Structure formats: structure tokens, C-alpha cells
Figure (cartoon, rainbow, N blue to C red):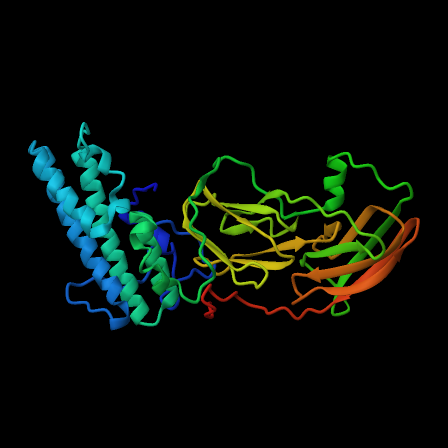
Length: 405
């Protein structure tokens, strides 16, 4: 288990760098890396509800473990190795061996105790207890979203295993949580494009030869009979006769930069894996409640990423649970040919074999794709495709489904 040191300032950032009082999410205001969140201040007489009894117990264990580790650090400084080990063992019993595994080697035979590291861990448990108390109070007040954010800051402090037993209380009703370790990324990596995903570009890059006879297709997606305006979309083509060769899964990136997702729309084949790196100085929490791929990547800081594999065809809408203005789409495609439109809905295919195809078209303004059959003849072909502009407007709900903004 990898343990991280998180400062008090970072904790405020983790919960949400500019969270309004109502729901703990930023609705798109100017970034403020020092802004905190509106959370209840801990008090000695705060009592949590009976449902949160396991949380109350864990808070007490963390506080007591913090005291035991502080005593251990003091004993180390006083050159009393035996007493230091006894205090450490007491903390180990309270919170579990995994929660203090990074310290265990120094208390083993031949180990060298380090009072600073022990004291640091003591501080982390104390801060985690404080975050759990705030989380419990927010939960009892009905603010599930903020409660989970505060719980997550405590989780970062002490590790996933240390709070695993109480995690379901705070995450019930949210998408499945991905708890794999974060991956380090190059903070100087160049930005991703606005849109990404074109099977024809992939074929040309891989030097796949075009068919013996070639048909092209150019067209536009119209929304409710009108030209699209600043709305990207997707068009896929699948031959009606014969079995099309499936696209190989690929690896792609959807980054968080400047408090937005880039690319805004990404098209990938079924089975592809996408990395979600954070290039901002604030924390983010990527999630999706889409039936195609519900997931929650949790909060993580600049220079870190988590990955997710998309195994089912469909449209996935992304959100950030800390910043309500952030939104993007993943189009998971099983068809062999696909392109993303530009902002006016225009698209083109350059290397199609003549024949009959099943065309699917979708716009980010639409709830779902439309399907129709078309015939591609050798040479130039043109088409205008109509979709409905029936997608919900406004700010996306949080990961618990509650309204934001």
C-alpha cells in the first residue's frame, strides 16, 4: 500500500477548491487554488447518527492510534526503543497492520525507527479522523456529495484499506469506485485535441491499403432540421453484407486541463482503455453514471492519472464531481468505420468499399443515435443526416444523481 502525505491546505483542495454551500461542487467560477469548502467544523460534542456508528468507531480508533504513534515518536527521540515499539503495536491493533505497514519495518528486528515518519503518520490519522467527522456530519445533514468528498480526503491520508469498512456508507448510490493506484504522468505533456477518434486516420497511419474500388461519403448532421452550431457528433458505418473485421482496442487519453476535459469527444473501439490524467493544480473527480460504463475514479492530484477500460458499445457522458461545469463524451464503437464531426456537424469518409451500410449518427445534443441504411456507390456520395436535439440541457447532476448549479 502506498501512503501519501497530504497537507491541510491540500485537504481543502481535495474536497473542492471552490465548492458552494449547497452541494459541494464548483459550477464554473474562476479557479481559486486556496479556496476551501463549506464544511462543518469538528467539535468534541458532535454526535453522529446511529447509522454512522461504524464511522464513529473508526474516528475513535484513528484518534487513539494518532496518540499512540505520537507517544511512539517521543519514545524514539528518548532512545527507548522497547517503549516505542509497544506504542506502535497498540496503534497497529487499533487501525490494522495494513494502515501502518510503511512503519512496520523500522520496528522489526534490525530496523531503525524514525521519529519524524512516525509523527507524520500520527498527524495523518488525526487529520483523517477530522475529515471523517466532517463527512459524517455532512451525511447526517443530507449532503451526500460533500460527505463523500470529505471522506475521500481522509481516504487519501490513511489509504484505502484503513477506511474500507466504512466506505460503502458514503458511496452507496454512486457509480462503482475505481481504487487502483494512480499512475504518474508527465506534467509537461502537450494538450490533447478538441476531438479525437477517426478510423480512417488510424488506417492511414497503419498503412492499411484502401479497397480496390473506393467510394467516399461527405455529409452533415442536422439537429431538428437545422445546421449544427458548436455541437460535435459521431457517424459510424457497418457493412450490411459480410462480417466486418472488428477494430483492435486502443489506448487513448482524456485529460483534465484548465478545468475542462480534452478531448471533448473521444471515439474508441470496444475494449479500449482510456487514461484520465490531471494537469490542473486542483483536484478532480472523473465519473460517469451512463449505463454503458458507470464508474467513479475518485479524487487525485496534478501529475496523476487513473485508467478505465470500456467494454460495452455506447455513449458515455463524463463529469467531474468537484466542478459541475466540466463535461465530455466517450463514444465506444463496435462498427469498423467511424468519424467525429466538426462543430458544424460536417463529416467525411474517404476510403469505403461500395455496398450497403448501416449508418448511425449521434450529436452531443441528442439523447441517442439514429440508425438508417445507405448505399455507397463508387466515387463521391453525399448525405445529410437528421437527429433530434432532445438531450437534457444544463448542468449535469452529481454522481449521486442530485441536481447541481
